[in-house]
Length: 308
Image (cartoon, rainbow, N blue to C red; front, side):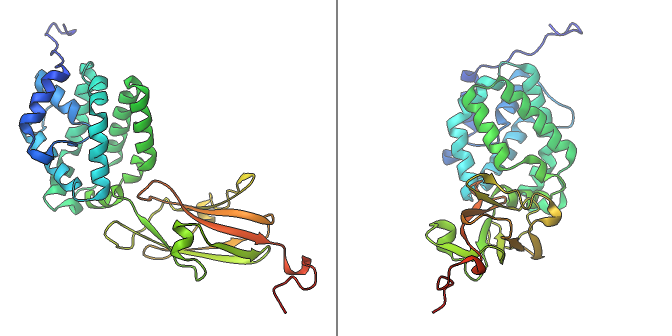
């Protein structure tokens, strides 16, 4: 019984949710609707509604259209598989709490206009706001607080992989591109694809010399893209050197999707180092380059400077 004397809606069980998902599914479209679909379904089955939101059936249809869009990319397919794996855990976390299910529906209502625009090819017309992202963050915090450890870890990993705050002020089209992740291409003359992926090439440089590190960032369609989260750092045996955490000293954008960084080796000890570029990568991992800092030429014994 609510405080106003009305009867609170009963929370549907997971067994009640399964027939709805089966009936609404069309072959391979079963799977990810969105992380919040369980909250929506729970609200719909419990008779909960929110002013201004689409009807329950319309919301499900919209989210299935979003799923169809996601199924067209590798990252979207990864998220679909993730949902297959953790949907029971999501149900157990969300369904027992009417407040949480109503909160999930309220968050979805915020994103309905943008999702409609995205699937209708009008994603450039709708921009994600700070209020929308804050509401989604709050909802995920509450889900994580009642989730089991495995689901908590997944939520934390996915939020770290694609920080929601980076979506603020992006259009829905831009956000969709960002969700699919970016690729980095090394452009420095002495850097090869093998050095990025196989790590079978080490760049040698004498301490005190300046190394120009150049790279390009492209989206999943191969288009150059600006990534404000790109940060370059160097690790040695003692840990990160934190050389470019200050944005004014970090990689400089020399063109759309093109970056350059003048890496000073004056303060780097001799020996092996790893150069990392952290960015919105598809894998969530940074690009990596092996670097070996040699002693300055003037410190080398006669005959060791690479000459005759």
